[in-house]
Image 1 (tube, rainbow, N blue to C red):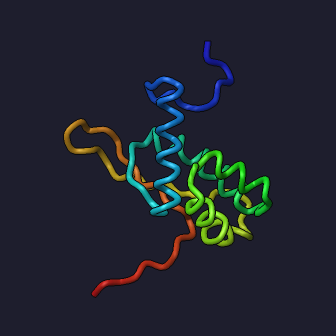
Image 2 (cartoon, rainbow, N blue to C red; image 1 turned 30 degrees about the vertical axis):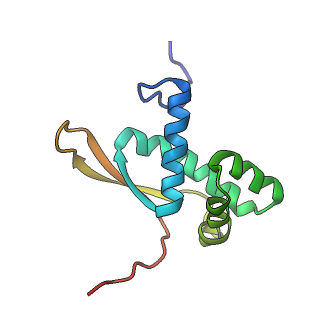
Image 3 (cartoon, helix red, strand yellow; image 1 turned 90 degrees about the horizontal axis):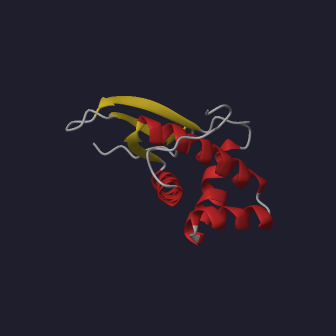
Length: 125
């Protein structure tokens, strides 16, 4: 039985699932919004909120833990210098999921996951 087991398996092996979540997390930090399936977005939200909370601490230990997750110094500096300070006064809920409807081809439910406080988009008229 599956009582009190958290997280989604996403029909993948453990290593494949960890790599998938890690790549989605890297893309989210780099682009601040990504389009993916509902289940992946809901699972990614857990990890994104955890790493932003880590970024708000801004200690050497927190940076090393973030580097272990992200594997890139540029992404770690982006997280700690750009993204985390925006959420200084927020206790949680750093991401939002917007449902987009079914994907053409296989009708998989798609979602847009983004940070709730994003940099102002430059309007191109």
